[in-house]
Structures are given as C-alpha cells and as structure tokens.
Length: 263
Length: 253
Image (tube, rainbow over all chains, first blue to last red; front, side):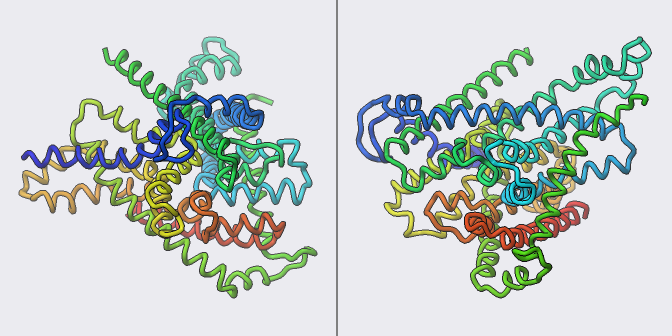
C-alpha cells in the first residue's frame, strides 16, 4: 500500500520541477552579475537597475500594461453585454453568435493576427500607427473568452430577478446595471483577468498589427533573443523574476482569502 | 422602440462580423487572387507543388503530434495525482500548475533556453529534442487543467462500483476512469495540438530557424506577399475546422 501513496508525490515533484526549475534558476541568476546560467557571479541589482532605467525597456513595459488595460476594459464591456444580449435572444440567433464567438477561440493566433492585418491595413488602408488594428486585433482575441466566462453565470442566475426589478419600478437600465451586472460581477471580474493575461501573453496578433515603434514584452523578448546586448538580455531576466514574484503573490493572497472564507 | 435585453448584444455582433468574419472572408479572397485582383488557383497549386511547403506541413503535423502525445502522457498522471490523492491543499497545487500560464510565454521560453544552453552547450546539437522540450514546456499546463477538471469531478461511486464488481486496478483504469475522462482528453488535445502546429515563436527563440506552418505566414508577411500568406492561413483554417469537427465527433461518442 505504501507504493500507492508515494508514487504520485514523486511524480508531482518531477513535473513541478520541470515547470518551475527554469523560472526559478533565471530568477536566482537575475540577482547576480552573471550573464549566463552556471557562470560564477556575485550578488548584484544591476539587472533591475537596467530594467527600470533603460528608456526602451521601461517604455515597452508601460506599453504592455496600458495596452492590456485598454483591451481588457473594452473586451470586458463588449463581451459582457454580448453575452447578456445573446442569452436573451432567440435560440437561433444565440447559436449563430455562439458559433462566431468560437472562431477566435479555436483559430490559430497567427491566422487571427494575419487576417486582421490583411483586412485593416492592406485592404482598408488603416495606418498601424493609429493603434486601431492592434487594439481591434487583441479585442478579437480576448472578448470571446470574456463571453465564455459570463455565459455560465447568466444561466445560473435566477431568471425572474430582472422582471422582479422591473415590477419594483426599476427602469430597464437600472435593472441591468444595479441587479444583473452586480449579480454577474464575479464572472465579469474573472473575464477581465483572462482578457488582461491573454493580451499580455499575445505575440502573434501584436506582431502583425502593431506600429513599428511600439513593442510589448512578447515582441521585445523575441527580438532580444536574436542577438541583443548582454545587458538587455539579463535585464529581461529581472523582468521575468518580477513577474514571477507577482504571480506568487497572487497565489499567496488567493490562498489566504480562501482560508478566510473557509473559516 | 421598446428596450429588449437582446439588444445589448448588438455591438458585439457587429464587432464579430467586422473583426472576425470579415477578415477571414478577405483572407479567402486573397488566397485565390493574384496581385492584380484576378482569380487564380496559382497560390493553391503552388502550395502543393513546392516541396518546401509540403515538408513544412508534414513536419508541423508531426511535431504537433509528438508534443500532444508527450503532454498527454505527462499530464494525465499529474492530473490524476492532483485529483485523487486527497492532498489537503489540492487547490493550491492546482494553482501552482497554472501559475506558469500567467508568466509571459516568451519570458518562460527564455528561461528554458538559458537552462538548455547551460546543459547542452549548443542548442543546435539536438534540434528535434529541443523543439519537443520547448513545446511541451510551453503547453503542458494547458493539458493538465482540462484533465484535472474531469478527473476531479468524476463520480467516485462509479469507481467504487467497479471495484465492488471485482475490477482490478488495471481494468478499473482502462474501462472506467479512462473512458469517463474522454471529454477532458479531447479538450486538452485541442488546446495543445493546434497551437503546437502554428506557434513558431517557441522554436524561433530556441534557435533562429523553424519549419512550422505559422512561420510560413511570418515569412510571407515579412516579404509583403499577402496572397501566399493568405493561402497558408486558409489552409490552416481548413485544418482547424476539420480538427474541430473530428473533436466534436469524438466527444459526442
């Protein structure tokens, strides 16, 4: 019986090592002066200094965050109302919306980005510098996931609540904003979170639609692997260390909150 | 006009038509026209006549297949261990499997590249091995999550019933647990196979050359060759539609 209990634990340890070892090693080395993993070096914060003091690097971090926020907010609004609208439409129209919503989900991001570039830039002649192709492209990528998060919450909601609010002399607008949206808030929140993560992770739509001078973390890192200065390369280690710390902080906070709720 | 709740969906429908349907329609038009806008089969035939593009298609299918199988073989026991072993902190462990997904994938691949560099000395020595390691590293969480979801929600009484009826551990797994987890396997495969076929950045970052379908689009894009790029996109779209239909069929059975 003992084998049964230890084998899964050992397996989990191996898999988690595979998933985490590279990130953890890079995080450790980001605090040293080494320019390669395995190289000897002393403790140093120069990578973090470079990360925050190089205008290029600072610009692309801020650019990534602003873009993710804008795309996140717009996608969340569009997807939430889209889901509400589809939910209360006739069966047939809902199925059509559902099908269209599924396209960017299963489609390859390369194709989504390329097709957006063909339509907006090549056919319609929209200038990439307006950021319109970039924002529209990322929204096409993110909004379907907001829709998919909000939809299940809608079907679990008490269907009479909206009518009850109207009977209590709410205007339809108040009933939607004060009753329905409030009830949906948790899934709208997780939809927003998904949209922001997708936007920050995206490489393909961004490359095909971004202005030439604009870079996100993804596009910048990919270019940097093709022969950037060592200083820039190791500054990116500091960036991944930073993101890793933020992710861990989120887990710790979620854990603490979960415990609180359990008590 | 009286307000109806279905009207709230109008902006999204308009958005979907303009920014999802229309771009794909334009891609199909571009795939079958030439530079002066005349209808042509040239791009289509060109794709199947060139040994370079055909080899790329075959190679990407092969890479995607190997990646998916290895992900499945690693993720299934992992999801099973997470779901079944009754750890007190099951949710935290699951969260830990998902956290890598929050870290920008290009930064994660950078980390992997540095480690592989340190181990192997030169990445060019084992191109295929590195390709698979890179892809598995990138996509593994996407396979663990759906498998965990089905295995965690699986009705334990069905497994107990099997055991009461005299099934040994082997047949319990192959005739009860595995068939019941099929929806999770199916969605895991979709989440890994298609991206593994098209995501060329992982390989591009590991060593500056790739033979993946997606990278063809990238090279045509860089050469401003919209028509051939559209043809590759159209072919990828057809593969995706075909794959989704197969998946639906598999899940329904």
